[in-house]
Image (cartoon, rainbow, N blue to C red; front, side, top):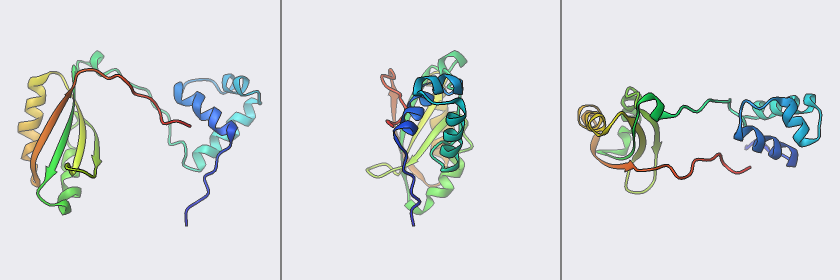
Length: 153
């Protein structure tokens, strides 16, 4: 049976504030929400306990670390039953930052950051396409990220 994860207007406002800046002090959130710092602390702990919040993170600018190419790769599998084994091998490639099991023409859709197109070619031909179970791939190079935002709350 599904757990009731209802959140109220204050929870939504807190989530909206902290997803814009995970380092915002609780007292600043409290001021913006017109409640006490203790109330914010309790609410955030409850959101963690319910599994709505799963941590906080810092975002790294890939370009500042020399990763100039971002690409998305659609992966075709020989058989859907090979998915778990293929994903375990994909996890061994550190440049791959996301992997999704999808509907549609691709079995998997992955996101990869590489230093340049030559590095991308190496990842594709020497690593990814050599994984048993992958029949072929289709690559899309991202020219520019125009939107990257948290889910609406």
